[in-house]
Image (cartoon, rainbow, N blue to C red):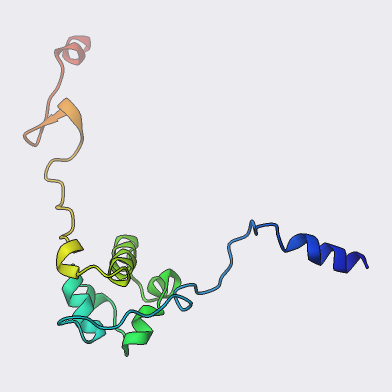
Length: 131
């Protein structure tokens, strides 16, 4: 009797533990649109050389991949997030030409603020007088 009561009480309460269910497999697979017919075409369209980092055998397999599978494939966090974000945008009906963007360029000057200007460290006269 107490097991039935516990089972009934646990149903309406949300789970506080993250499940390991592949939710990407439960989402609908979008149909290929426009000039995107294969997974390679989609990965080339989103840019950032994603076609060299991820290989998918079929259209359905691409749309069933999740973050765990991308991590096992050896993708960096930025690449995983960008690919999953692009997949969601495509799933919502947007064209990759609209939302795809190049990666952020590398920083040319190390450091922040007035301590580094034009690639050289700026020293204060306050620190020189203490020597």
